[in-house]
Amino acid sequence: MQQLVFATNNKHKLEEVAAKLNGAIKLLSLDDIHCHDDIEETGKTFADNASIKSRHIYFKYHVNCFGDDSGLEVEALNNEPGIYSARYAGTHGNHQANIDKVLTGLKGKLNRKARFRTVISLMWEGKECFFEGTVNGIIRHELSGTDGFGYDPIFEPEGYNITFAEMGMDEKNAISHRGRAMEQLIAFLNNLD
Ligand code: IMP
Image (cartoon, rainbow, N blue to C red; front, top):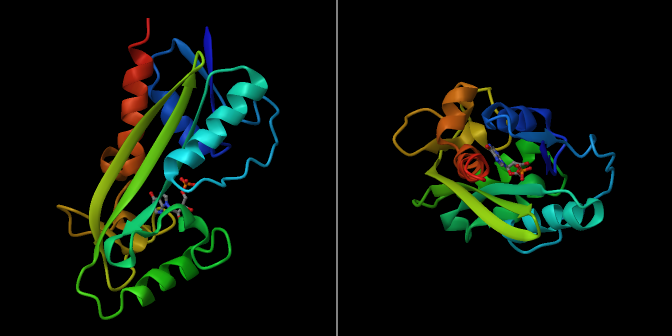
């Protein structure tokens, strides 16, 4: 059976992808291949960072691999926080501080348009392919909802009047940037000979 490493240890992300593969590919995490490297995301774009992860694993472990990178782009903030989404306010993963920084930056601005983006880099048999997913929406003035993570409580996807943090996981995955990028990756993998 073909093996494919997802350059993450996020169990939720792994399960989501594993459930959609048609059984011809065995999905492995970084832990599964005993990789505990601190792979630094030093790129300038989502694609760079996704590529740094997939290439690191492919060339070091000689196994097919993909990596992903995601973030929020707010139009009136020159597409910030972008690749700095996880550490926009300084500390990695301080979601409340990151949200506060976005809301402060948008004070007095009429344009509240934003989008989430995910880029996936797949290294398969020596070739690299990219897959991308986006979801457009607006930034609310206040937080709403308790589900999800990151900027979910302030992001209202287009066509809805609730935030990502008020949606069930399945509902969010069906329209999210990550869900859309993963769908493309899975379609590619399930159509390999
Ligand atoms: P990652 O590349 O998936 O680890 O995402 C990087 C950062 O972007 C996260 O730490 C969040 O701040 C933000 N982010 C990415 N996806 C989402 C999402 O679906 N909801 C809210 N925030 C997100």
